[in-house]
Amino acid sequence: MQTTSVTPPSLGIKILYALGQFGWSLAIFGVGNLLPYFYMPPESGKEVLFPSFIYAGPILLVATIIGVIGAGGRLIDAVTDPLIANWSDRATFKFGRRRTFMAIGFIPCAIFSFLVFYPLTHYESSLNAYWLTLCITLFYIFLTIYLIPYTAWISELGHNNKERLQISTFISVTYALGLGLGTQVFALQSYLENAYNMASTEAFQAILGSFAALSAILMALPLFINEQKYCLQNKSDQASFEAVKTVFRNRNFRFFALSDLMYWLSMTFIVTGLSYYLTVLLQLDKSYVSLLEIGLLGLSFLFYPVVNYLANRKGKKILITAGFVQFSILFGLIFFLGKFPLSPLVQASMLLLFSIFAVAIFGILPNVIVADIADEDAKRTNNHNVGMFYAARGFTMKIGISIATFLFPTLLLLGKSVENDAGIRATGIAAMIFCILGLILFQFYEEEEIIS
Image 1 (tube, helix red, strand yellow):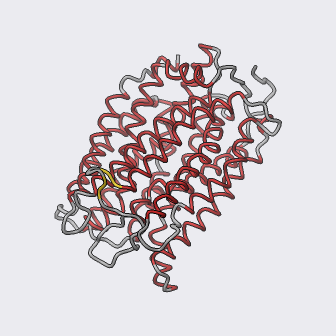
Image 2: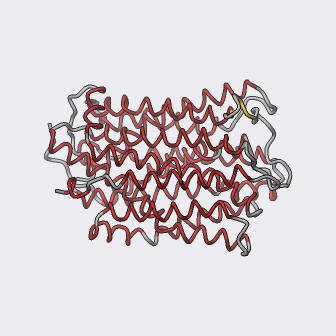
Image 3: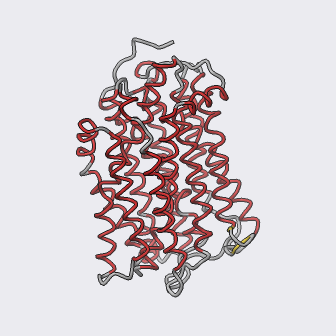
C-alpha cells in the first residue's frame, strides 16, 4: 500500500542522500579497479612497484589467480543482489526498510575495502590468495546490503520524473567525486614515497586505509534521512523468485540491462587499464593517472546541465546512443596509443577531451532509465518492485564487471611491459567490441513506450 502523506525531499535531503554515493564509490574503487595494479603491477621499465604477494602467472593456461578471485567475488555479490532487494522491498522495520539494511552494511563494507589490500604475508604465498578470497567475498556481500536498498531510494525519494533526474544528477556528481578521489591514489602514493620515504606498499596501504575511513563516514550520512517522512512506501508482496521473474518479463528492462552489462564490461577494462595505458604505452609517470582522471571527471561536470537539458528535450535514448558511439571510437584508439606522432601528454589529453560528454551521459541517465522502467511497470502491473529492478540492474552490471575482472589479467598474459605491450593493447580492442554490442542491444529499448 502506498503512503500518500510523504513530504517532497528538500535540496538538503537530496544532497545528504547523494553523499552516500560518494562513500560507496570511494569504497569500491580500489576493489573494483586496483587489484591488478597491486597484485600484477605494470612493468614500466622502472623498479617493481610492489613485491609478489600472489602468483601472477597463468593457471589452466588462460586464467590468473587474481582474475578468478576478482570475478568470483563479483559473482557471489551478484547472486545476493535479488535476495537483499526482495527482503528490503518486503521489510517493515521501524527504522526504515531501506535504512536498516544500509546501517548493517556500511561499516563492514568500508573495513573490507581496505583489508583486500592487506595481505597476511609480505611474500608470495597461497595464504594471501585465501585471505584475498575471503575479504573480497565479504566486501561484496556487505556492499550489496548497503547499495541495493540505497539505490532503491532514487525512485522513492524522487516522486516524479523531474525529481528522479535531479537526484540521479546529484548522485552522478558524488559518484564521480568518489571515483576522482580514488584515482588520486597514484599521485598520493608518489607523494608519500618522495616526501616521507615510505615504501610503495606502505604508502599504498596508508592511502587505502584513509579512503576506507572516509567512505564509512560518508555512507553513514543518508541514515539521518527519515525514510517514512520522505520516501514513497510501496511494499512488495511478491517472493524473491516471483519478483525476479516479474522484473525480467519487462522487455524494455531486458534490453536495457543487457546493453548496460556491455557498458560495464567495456568500462571496467578501460578504468582498470588506465594505469597501464599511461605508464607503459605512453611511458608517463603513474601520477599522471590521477591527473588525467580527475581532469576528466571535473570537466565532465560542465556537461551535466547540458545532459539534463537534452534529456528533457530530446529524450534519454538518443543521448545514451551517442555515448556508446563516442566510447566505441575512443576505446578503439587506445590500440594506437604511443604510435601517434604526438607527445605522450598530448595523446593522454586527447583521451580526456574526447570522452568528457560520454562520461556525463552515462553518469546521469542509466539510473533514471531504471527508475522510469520501475515506475511504468508498477503502474501497469501493480507490483512495486523498485528494489528488485535496481538489484537486477546491479546483477547484470556485476556480471559484466566480473567478466572484465576475469579477462583483463588474462589478456595481460600476452604482454604488459614496455618491451611487449600486446596484452595491454588488446584490452582496448576488447572494450571497443563490447561497447559496440552494448550500442546494438540498446536500440531495442523503446523509450516512447515507457514514457507513454
